[in-house]
Image (cartoon, rainbow, N blue to C red; front, side, top):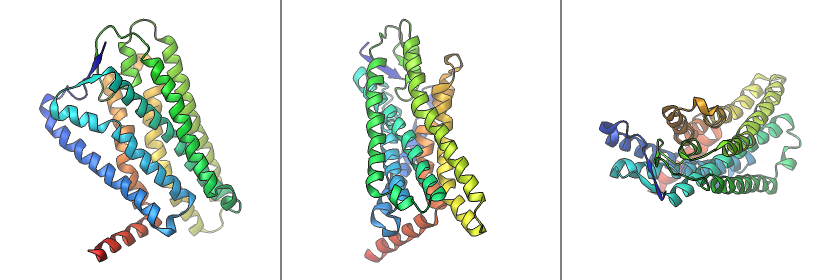
Amino acid sequence: MTEFILLGFSDYPNLQMFLFIIFFFVYVIILMGNGIIVLITRVDQALQTPMYFFLSNFSFLEVCFVSATLPRMLTNLWTQKRSISLFACATQMSFVLMLGNVECLLLMVMAYDRYIAICNPLHYPLVMNHKVCVQLVAACWITGVLVEIGQTCQIFSLPYCGSNQINHFFCDIPPLLSLACGDTFLNEMLVFTVAMLFVMIPFLLILGSYSKIISTILRLPSATGRTKAFSTCSSHVIIVAMFFGSAIITYLRPKAKHSSKTDKFLSLFYTIVTPMFNPMIYTLRNKDVMIALRKLLKKILTYY
């Protein structure tokens, strides 16, 4: 086996150009939206806080994450040439899994940041100083990258001697394991273990953090304080629900319940829909980001 065929959305031959246009504009929106968040969190002095430092890194990560899948999918839709070499498939899967793991860990770190800010506000400047923030982000990247390089090597060490058609729009573990010859039980157990470590455990820790945060908010004396505290957390909660919900169903459900159409739909959700809505959720629901965005637009208009 030297190459695979990514079937993608070939089930809909009459919609190929329409899908190309839709996904092209979605890609542009993701790049522009997340790029603007990275820009304003860098240049606006009011946003030089740990929360926006993590948001900036998260938006950069979203750009990388979507760029691991969408350009290849757009090329396939445009040219109708769906072949991908073994090395390119391994590279794509490695990047998708690495960036997905980093995103899970970073969302957990962002929840920890909100927990310290709301539950221990007096210790917040000391605990979440700039050095600690940089170390936390670096730890997310290093852990996610090292684990997934090993897992990718292990998946692609399997023999592939049957069909070379991957019923997906990118190289992902479930459809690849279904093409492998021989017993894949150990590989499936490894996938399950990694998913538990990088998806389920961070998700449970985030739930624990927000249960403490909510109980603290409800004890605040003023209604204004409660509203402000809820507004700073609500955007993060929405992103967590969208990303982790689809990822947990994809990687932690039994093999017998895997369906190619369901897998493609869920993958679209966490690889494309979440990165697209991330800038909208964080800007429309965040007063500080909206003020910074208006200031940036004002400067641009004044310059021209």
